[in-house]
Amino acid sequence: MTLTKIIAAFTAIITLLFNFFPNSETIAEIYYTIQSSKFAWVETTDTIEEAVEEKDAQALALLASNKLKEKHPTVEQDIQKLFDSIKGDILYVEDDTEFGGGIHCDFRFHITTSTDDYQMFIFFTAVGPDESVCGLRRIMMWVKTDEYHSWWTDTENYITEGVIEEADRKLTRSWNCGKGNTADEYVFMVNEDCSRLKGEKNIEIMTSRNGGDDAAPESGYAFQEDDVLKVYLIPEGEEPPEPGTREPDAVITKDNRHPECYVEPGRYYLYVEPSDNYIIYSVSVITKL
Image (spheres, helix red, strand yellow):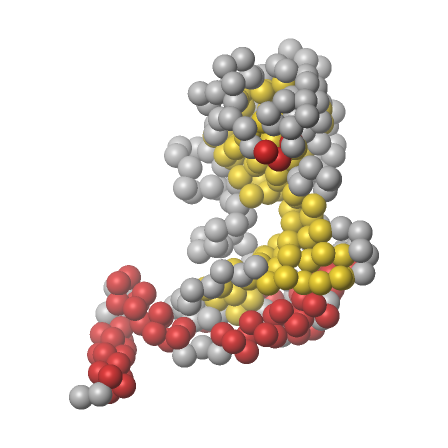
């Protein structure tokens, strides 16, 4: 029996088993993986990459899943608004996608313009148990906000069917703070649930520091014994608290660099109070996207 016949026989057996046992997670995973291997990934990838390069909202809208169209009835206009938010002339688009085959692909494009840097993520599902989610399910964009390589997820141009469990993107704001007590000017999202966190937590904060006054802010040094960084998540529209008038949402030290906390879902910005006013700290907010 040739290899082709063996593969065909195996596929037929899995298909038969799937029809009899559709609720079996193991059989379903194998079945959908086989089906996705037949999917026109090359054609889809070329279409998505060309649409990003040409800022072609219509081409992406045609790929949208039914669930995304239901959540965003004006999906083409929404995508066009996202493209219109890209400032400057696009110099080049680099495809940084790491795709090893499978049911889903989270496309990643680094967009360099004459004025700014962007990273765009496009999540696509080829096959699945629910046909309504097949297709393009989410577009999100990171914007480089300063020369210290801080990144931000634009809350106004975030197009999604909702929280997607199969996707990995959870970083909402990566900020290299100014020295001393500092408020961030960029607003980010906090959703209801971050299921991978223990207990009733929906935020994880990751931090590092630079090595000293002359070190690069993005160098990612570990905290030292006397480093203490108080982090506050301030609701959009509210002023930062006067020092000592409110408990911080997280206190970061050498032994507690990745704390978890809970805030009500909504839109927030960051405010920090460092113990060392000469050090630039990096703060990353991870929530469910």
